[in-house]
Length: 98
Image (cartoon, rainbow, N blue to C red):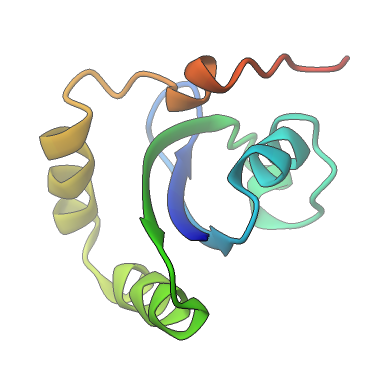
């Protein structure tokens, strides 16, 4: 299974779209700043959206599609599934390691 996900910061001001084959591991890495780059720099630790796909090519295609979307479209997608923009990883049982 593959996952396309959207992260944000505590203020919901920055959005990041990613793809992975292990959502729990990848979110753990983001939350604990083990991923250098954009998500670490902007403290993107909050998962506000994700979807699954069984085909890696389709998952990558969907990630690229979402990355091209306007911010408003992404916000609408998130709000349709997660109106309060809560951290969906809370249901994963992850804790921040620090």
